Amino acid sequence: MPSDPYHWLVLVALKALVILPLVLLAVWASRRTSASVISLLLACAVIYVPLSPFLDGLLPHITLTIPFLKHTGAFPDNIPVLEEFERNNPMPANPAEIIFQGASSINPGDVILAIWLLGALVLLVTKLWRSMNTKLWFIGSRPVADGECTLHCLKRLCSKMGIKREPWLMYNSRVHGAQAVGILRPVILLPEGFSAMPKESREMVLIHELEHIRRKDVFGRLCLELISVLFWFHPCFWITLRRYNQKSEMACDDAVLNAGYSAAQYGEVLLAEGKALASTEGGVPKELKPRVKYLLNKATDRHSLSKAARMKFFALFMLALVPMGLVSFSPYDDELGFETIAPTEGLKAVWRLNLGRGNIVVDSSGGGHHGRINGASWVNDPERGDCLSLDGVDDFITFRAPDADWTTKDFTFCVWLKPASGSDGGGLLLRGEFNQIWSKGIGTERTGAINYAEREIILAGPRYGPNKYFLYDPGLLPSFNYFGIGTARSTVALQENEWMHLAMVWKIKDNEARTEMFLNGEPVEVKHLQRLFVTDLSDWPTKTWMFGVSDSPIVRGNNYEGCVSDLAIYQKALSQEEIQMVKKGNFSLEQQN
Image (spheres, one colour):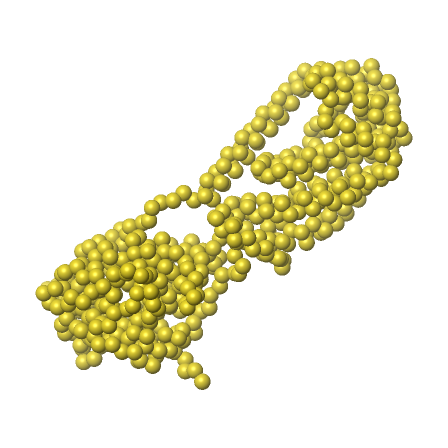
């Protein structure tokens, strides 16, 4: 089912390429079928195609995968439930948390939609202008006098054809052939020399125009013209509409023959009308030749349809078209979906980062802490499958902050990382404000000074110590940084272009906080800058967390470059065994038999 006007427009354009050529082929193969039936079939097809995309979400359908369609920008790459969540829960962001954005790019979908709207508007204005000029013809029109035989002929024919509301008859010097116009009040415009025509010729012309009125062709053509305005760019719609106009004229020609007149008699009337038009418009109308040829084809079925029959055929044709409309299109060969992890003690958030497309990342913990991708791209890794790749320049991910305390309570951070070749580390997860201002402490008269600083998990270099803390220090050593308060750093570095599972455990024992680190489920030695006591600390409040950027002076401006997958946060200190379970994707920490 279409998600927006642009998506609907592209789907209709694609479906028209399938449905309308098949219908036109069926029309060609049914050359001897009644023109009334064929014109109704063509009208049904033109009306049905714009409605067909809405069947995709109601009935089972076949989806044809065309990867190129991804470049149109018309097909949603996010899960609908996440899009709805984003609309109802905008990403919170304080001014200081709004960080650099990548170079702005023009959305091709918006450009195409604007061109489409402009084209439709120009065509609509053009048609309205022509319609206004046609209406002005009435200014010079005069009604047929009550005593004229043409009016008596009209009354007799209306009674014979079952037309209860007689149309007005009016002479107009600007028309060179009879025309049925008007929807609410039908009018037949006649050329000035109409009364001088032979009686039988006049009757044949009136039968043709009255059949247009009986068939409601003026209203039907208006509806189809409006659809053609919407799809002005699509040749299949124009070809089908032109074919409909031709068949509707032939259906009215059949009404003349069914009234008892011969094809030769009526053909002469059409040729005379064509000559009159040629004298003023510089040529015989193109549609005249196939109409005369159609009249002379004796093998053609010429029965007309009653109102009840038209309704039945309309329903039948629409049902016959449904199977063709159940072929849909997508650039993707699968539907996006995700599983929610069973409630687990201490689990605050799990971002699997494995959807493979879209700009929304899912919190699979069920907590609704979904994130948004800013510049990072989806890649398919031979080891980890779909994951996110960051370029180290302006790519990052913003998460809605879970209710997790990084300071006064135990917590665990787990993630799969694959630093790019030549990577020099950088920021991983920032809990703070991207403003290059790191608070060291606050105080009140009642409590005295309380350390109150931003928190950041980073990949830093080997220089380490009290006198080197402020030095810019890139590298691949996992570090947990509390600026101005303390920091912990692994002695084992990550390897470039190699997937490694990193786990950091913030553990409080006897009021003292210590950091443990694990690489690929195995503990590594950790160096601490100084001892930290939780009674002297206060957690940093923030509405969002950011992955991939660095604000710490140690690696400031040095953002993470490489791939990332399966980022999990627990409000508990996981054991080595539990970390190994998380490494294997067992985030609910269930014991496997």
